[in-house]
Image (tube, rainbow, N blue to C red; front, top):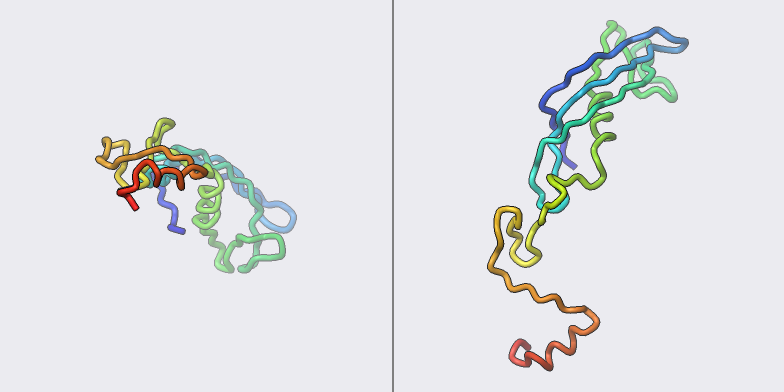
Amino acid sequence: MRDISVEFLHGSLQFTRVQGGILVQGEIATRVQAECVRCLEYFPLDAVLEVEETIALGGRPRPGMVYFVTDEGWFDPTPLLREQAWVVLPIKPLCRADCQGLCPECGANLNLGACDCRREQVNPHFAALASFLHPEQE
């Protein structure tokens, strides 16, 4: 699995002291580089990260809390935002709704043009009968 790449982050986070830690809330608009499941090309995908997480105080995570403020008082939001970016990605991202994908024979990207491969739609149940029609292919 590759790391997620974002082009920008725009928004705000609000930090509120609550019992047992600090509540982080906010919305961050971003554009991530997603990989199309059909043609395997990367494309920009706009997303909104909705953040609501309680972070621990005291320099280390506590049970039920993954993120924490260091002993020096710093909080790095990168892991939290990275996790939220993974959550908003669709399960099967498509570069466009009519993506043609890759040729199963040669691997050419069919969005860029047709390939020279010969494609016969043969029902796998009748594949054995194809040898009777084309005995020279054996």
